[in-house]
Length: 246
Length: 235
Image (cartoon, rainbow over the protein chains, first blue to last red):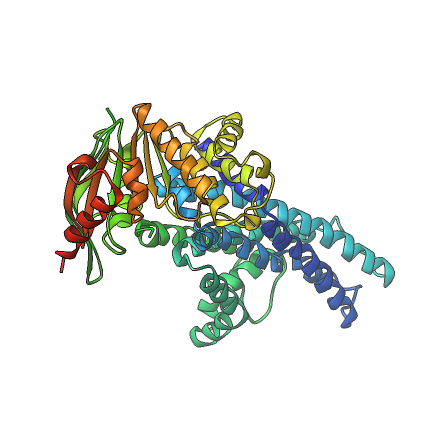
């Protein structure tokens, strides 16, 4: 297994695209928190602080796309042939990719967290608020944000393996987050909507998330996201991964 | 010892039967020319041998074992499939290091094969800057990386300049003389006539002829007329 993991890391570390993609995560955090403050977010309100830090979980959009590239990107460039020649056991290939992409997703989440704390603290200082790094919700929100970045990277690996067509996989993932989950949520009602992946990720990524959406508890959301990752990966392994590579 | 044995392979894609009951053996120590018109099932057969495509029936064995059960596939079989298969942004050396890592092959071997295929000077260039011929050479370097006993090459001369073709001929000859099994799929008959010891001619997914090149005719013209006659009967 170790040689395959080393090979997957080599694939990632020798191209620029994935790193540019991941760099967009912290940028989104900076823009998002700045936007929150500029649009009148009250820096005296602890809930607003939590909402600012929850942008770490939103940055997981980029670890999701990053994960999609793991398998679908190899189909796109035709390198999947060499990958399966090196390891005819295709399940081991996906396992090796997860072993690389999930930790990289964690690092992306950590970088976003550091950036989120720095930007939030700076804005709070500038606007005369009091930023509380020590609040329990702060750490739970940041830890949840990192967890969402890991889970979305793994879900992305699963989606890319299942769909194989890079453009279709990315378009479908983005459409789901931007549009489809919202509509699906309205159709099934909030009791079921909270089990949908983006809603679950919000429950994980903000410790004190409340409101009409009746979010899952943070740990429950984490289990649900893990379940989606497992479901996509298993679905890929029993269907598309077994198909002929022509 | 590790020849390639194709036994009764059949493969259907939707309503198209690409390979029907194909059987032949490519012996060790020989260059086997695998000839056939476009769409005759050559590439599908090679992909089945490599475990990329699952046959509907039959088996493809390498030294008696299917590819998927080889203990160290890259050190047993080297394959060149097409000019694609590279990430355009990756440097040539890194492309080979990806393959070497997965097979537990030391990095020093990467520079050896880059030298062997004449890409030493281009090792640190990104593949997007490569010509078709250079991509072919890089693909060959990947096939040679594990110092395998069996080589499967799909149209290896395609895209090479005349000097490259002459070089390739010497390379294939040397590999076979070392006792390796070399299968070269091609429709460039004059090339095969100069390189192969053994030919397998296929058409419409079936073997039309398998035997020594000398049994057909040693010159390109004789091979061409035999090829056209054998593959025309396919109907």
